[in-house]
Length: 205
Image 1 (cartoon, rainbow, N blue to C red):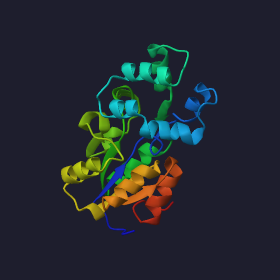
Image 2: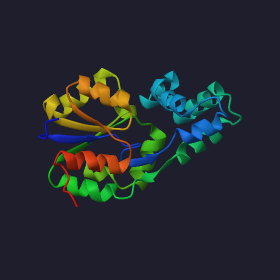
Image 3: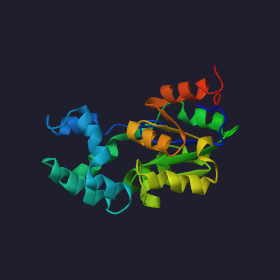
Image 4: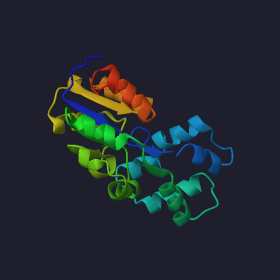
């Protein structure tokens, strides 16, 4: 990887923010889904794409999700479950971003939805660190579709190879690499910090 970059771009859930839709989904499915199937549910299910791109409300998605998985709960109960799976910023994320922002441009590229985005804005105290926020439900594009990386690069007005990107889903990382970005598969803040330090973008402590 080239250690010279113009901007650092971060996913949120699983990277800077404690979101776990995998283990609770495995439990709710009563054995219908294992961990990898639950992860792929969030990547590949058509209703997820609608939610992520703002084409349906969280409530409509919740009803469809409960129905498709055969869950014994109504839309309101499922929506409450979804909300509870987003816990908060990882400890140390705010401090790390504050340190990074002194030396680097920062941006977010996140598959997100109105329910979670509102909670992140109100409660997590991270978004003020970023120059640009690319939330899928607001721009109508989602990872790992090639179009979202092209859109972000145009908006940032930087060369592809000078973007460093951090995501916890390998499909999104691979797509970013195909777009010419420097992309890192990181799960949790420790792995993010390790990648940043290895490239000289975060001071070693």
